[in-house]
Length: 466
Image (cartoon, rainbow, N blue to C red; front, top):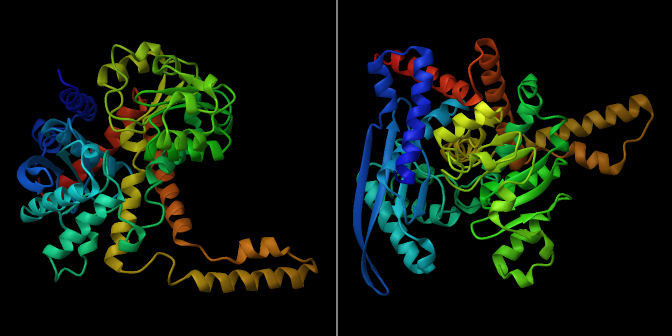
């Protein structure tokens, strides 16, 4: 069975486990489980080397709330089954963190590294045209975002092309999130998924659920291995390292790094971007095989590469107490079953990596309001804080240092507000799941997360008469 079909099978299996526990009637369960529609588009583009035909997909899983939301990935192995599985996961993910969107996902069957920027822009704009013609991209119906193989650059092309095709749409830039700041993007979107993983782990370590794992100590004392140092893995590792954690291992496609004393993330990232030649790496003793680092002892393992990297065949080699899923579907359902049985606590993807969609929601709201977050209250807050400092100094006779004055009197910037909102959403979602988990003694946090999200979907469908 192909990896993509296995991914869909895993999502379906986890959904079925939750439905069985909830006792949902079969017809309603089937409505929630099924993708409402999956579109395949094929289009030709005249490139430097001639006309080439591309295949793209956009799946809409659930429209109980609109618009539907989910990224677009560029990868040579994208197919309809993978896109449907990820669209379903997006529905559950949105429900878990209370983002008022349905679930969707898209993909273009392409290896973006084989094309220069000019040709890639042409391809992206034609793909946007195909999606727009079918109502598969719209501020009110379907809002994509970056995913594997795409970034704010591709989102800028998509937003600009959509605006060109819809010149009278005042909210045109809200058709996609993850855009550059100058095109209506929001500060903090690039780091959002990785930072959300940090907030997820922090929420877990602040709860009584830590007792359900074999881990000891605070989050800041943990040793962590990260698989995948892309946007998600890097920002998760950076936030955790800033918090005091030691990043002792990093696994990439063709290389891995390990050092019990801790790794220099920025050094590794710059080396990977500039050289990737082993002889150029300043700390050669840290270079290891993927297998060595995968099986190395650690407290927390964060798979942040792609789906299906932890399987029935290799799960027994993992030597971690907690797995926090940074990628979508990094554990197959069988690996999940065996690791749970072994006592490894798993913080599941539909919660742990929901930071991206949470901040995408903030960006969408910002685009509809046409106003930067903090614009109305920043100066007012500065004046209030400055007045409070004066009252404190006059009342106590003590002087507040200039550095403390500057820190205290500064109004909240957009990134401060975005991070605050993200932390609140991730923390509140975990607290709600934890309450349900402890009240019902469900077999795992993943099962609890599915039950929590599916119950919301059941209520939504019942409220609209289905």
